[in-house]
Image (cartoon, rainbow, N blue to C red; front, side, top):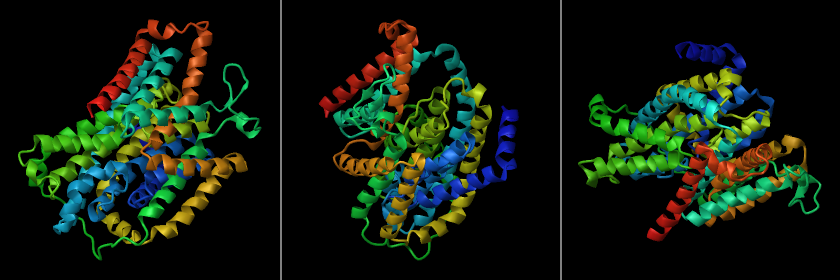
Amino acid sequence: MLENFIHGFMLLVSDPFTLLLFFAGLFGGLIFGAFPGVNSLTLCAIILPFTASLTPSDGIMLFSVIYCSGTYAGAVTAILFNIPGSPENAPTCFDGYPMTLQGKASLAIGAAVTCSALGGMFSAVVMMFATPMVADVAVRAFGQAEIFALIFFGLTVAGTVGAKSVWKGWLSVLFGLFLASVGTDAAEGVPRYTFGSYYLRAGIHFIPVILGFFAVAEVLIQGQRIAEKLRVPPKVSVEFPSFLTFWRLRIAIVRSMLIGLFAGVLPGIGGTLGSFLSYGEAVRWSRNRERFGKGEIEGVVAAETANNAASGGAMIPLLALGLPGGALTAMMLGVFQIHGMEPGPSIMMTSKDLVWVTFVAMFMANALIFVLGYVETKTTVHLLRIPFPLLAPAILVLSTIGAYSLRNLIIDVWVMYIAGIAAYFLRKWGYSAAGVVLGIILGYLGESAFVKTMKLYEYDLSVFMTRPISASLILLGLATMVYGMVRRNDR
């Protein structure tokens, strides 16, 4: 493993362009992740079309670095303004902002920087060990039937936990599956839901939909919320928590690492629910529960350790099984698809360099967050003085260029804006944007796996229940749906 790590490190640093992309992603995530409404998801959505001009290795590496740095950066606005930069940072507000009101903002940011780096490095190391092992098992045990069953399980989990309402979560996934079905039927080659349109025969490309859901819709939503400049403190510093503080919180940190890692591995869970679960467990196990919500540093530690630990966990099923667990990893799957590649069990054999460059980049990004977080945070806070109405036109222009450059078709621009308006209302009504994106991306892969299985087994549907792994995954998916309905009735 050490030899592979060194090889990946040399691949990262020996190519000047790759190294430039690494630092561009690192600083881009740190800056954009701190802007409310312009988080790392928006940044990745904007640059997704342009990854077609990069190598697959550079594209995945860039996204993974933005993933790591952007997750931490959202804690800055959560602590200073009670506005999380991304959903993963929402629990950080509970105690981070009260600490700011008490004059302890520097300490809260210092705790967030340190624990983000620790959680991220821990998950990156686990990812290095776990991904090859999972891929090795899957390459021997997974056929097209198992891939379809795995996608079915992932979609049921995403639908069940992806929205406040179970029904809205499932409808979000179904809407994504419907969008994926538009175009030419994979089995029969006949047009499907094209309404006589020549352009729709090629299907609805997922990239304009992603741009609409995470760039255009975000501009519309944040345009209502942020009408004026944030009141940025004139001076912000970062204070490193004492060794005694970390020693007192050592169990909470380890527990949060494990919760975040586990949440990242499970499809549809991710850093958002992981940070909420970690915060809840911190409250449950604390001897001083009454302090939480009033400026308890353990609350910041629990949330930020978990949401960054989820990043490495989310990469394990993406690389080893080809199953994204959330919106950002779904975009990474999109990068693979742009280049005609599919991550999955054989990736350790076919794209070993790509995998190890990604491993090294994520570990290094989290390590550098520890260093740069103390220096770069001050600059980021000054950039927050830029009012959102000035950023919105730039986001829309870049999104439009990205959508059009994909296939040089104006229809892709129209799809982007229609998707953005639809996403605006869907999110206002409580539907899951991530569920739609997972539905459209996994819908393509799921249909392909289903058709291949049917042709191989002469259209015998029982094959999914006679193969142990596929049967187990389908039963787990059905159990997840039943759990969702039971949970809804309990509420």
